[in-house]
Image (cartoon, rainbow, N blue to C red; front, side, top):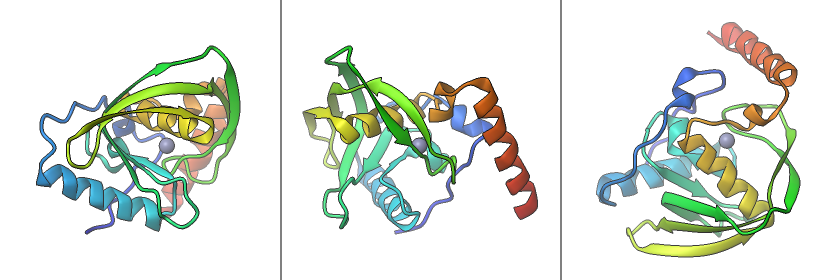
Length: 168
Ligand SMILES: [Zn+2]
């Protein structure tokens, strides 16, 4: 397994729209394993392939405290089951150090393939629903900062650009 490099906002590669996975083969399973290792090491609770500069529709997630509930979403698609919104303070490994409130529908139905390429469906609410929507946004080139005001987003952008310059 390998720790992958995580792209950080405002890197334009995070705006790439990921392509569907044609076949869940050993290469995809290797990617999934590397993404889990990268996510756990960060540490984070979710990671989309876009964030490690692989533009395929693959998401990994683990919301448990003890890394006991790894979830894999390949070619995920979801629909909203309610108009009711919930607000969570979101963060992102690609926007390190910033946490902001975002409103999203609180209940969704998701269809995806698992690590073996088997299709499954899941009804999600609460943090899981938020996390799935956040990660699926990545696959479409979207970030949680896009939901914020221009002012807030620009402030985050400037701070991260400054940090990237210092670290370069
Ligand atoms: Zn994210």
